[in-house]
Image 1 (cartoon, protein in one colour):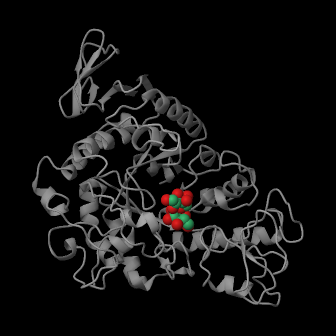
Image 2 (image 1 turned 180 degrees about the vertical axis):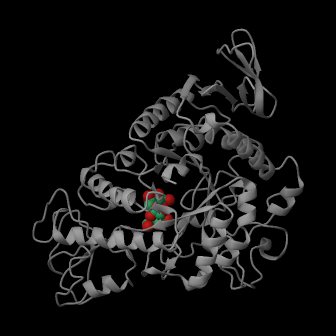
Image 3 (image 1 turned 135 degrees about the horizontal axis):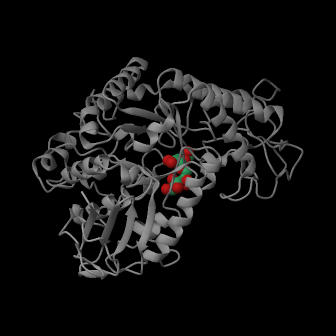
Length: 514
Ligand code: TEU
């Protein structure tokens, strides 16, 4: 075994609060997940990314960890967690956990220790300024809640104090420590101990939260030399001690691959190629390629190829997502027929697929529901899984669920299982086809045609993919070898003609020789 399993992995992301409630308390739990492993497998997924499962006061959906060595009792017992892991493994499903290395909860015992007025062993574990009355430009510090004479730096929300991995550029030597200092190294060793703890317990790897945020004043996203050095050190430890473990980063830059991450998500930031393909960039007034009003395939293709080449050269992979717990779901902006095209396109690009729970049935982003546990606008993507038309969409038997449930007749697992043409059944067929062709996990990738909103055509090994996001039929000036035929399609099959491919409206076709 080795971390090579990542090449053929297809992930399902589970936000544990919202997936399946087994005990009727209104929150999803480990036993609920265990009960649904067969469902996940039947979809064609062989791996799970579990959002934070740790003991937490949930002031940021669990990304505020109180105890890194304990599961949240909201999700069940330690035994329930182990049972979930063992059952998944028995079914051939890997589970990667969310690792939150940049910050703890303000209720974390080490933080509270560091907040005491007298020096102690945790004094330098977090970043504190050198006096409560002093102010520093550009420093995000909070003070006056604890007796330590200083302000603590936060990494995200006010409840999330930054762990001290040191600074690269030092502006205030009075309290900013070099990333090479003993204190910074001790934090890194502590992080390794957290990783070893969960790997020894059977976890298959980690999705690393805000992976680029550790060393402060470390340059832009595409630089971060000291943070890169830190992760390379951690990767070396893993390669030696846990060679099967994979690291997936929330960094969203090819630099992550150079830092040693097996996978890095291409997220919905600004003009990332992923945005130019499916989401658009409102600020810069750029429409997505899949926008029916017409987008720019060339802008996507140029950006994607450049990103892919860099990641591939560094031995990494791109994480391809339908959505995640921070991002608005693609429905209802797109209907289920468009989603079929989008999923098929995104997941035939070179990379590792991640399906956010519920996207396989076209669950909708719910705007304007009140924020719960600091979800804010993200809350609308975190509503409970829609299993059926039963009470609480089959998610829970509770009177009150932690977020409202929204079942509709079409958007639930039970009804889509019965409908041959449903998004759910499409996803299964598509993933089975993808699995059957090793071309999709090879690094043989070339874009053959990309121009405005015309059909996008690309090659994976001996296979050629042609997609048309518009409601009108279009030709792509690409000549295919005479022997090829359509092996898989969404909508009507595209037709290879002498000098072009005729691509029907709203269609996706994979051509190959057999
Ligand atoms: O998100 C970090 C991040 O990049 C966010 O700015 C994200 O884009 C934002 O939530 C806007 O939608 C990670 C986690 O994924 C997020 O859930 C946590 O709240 C955050 O870190 C802090 O741990």
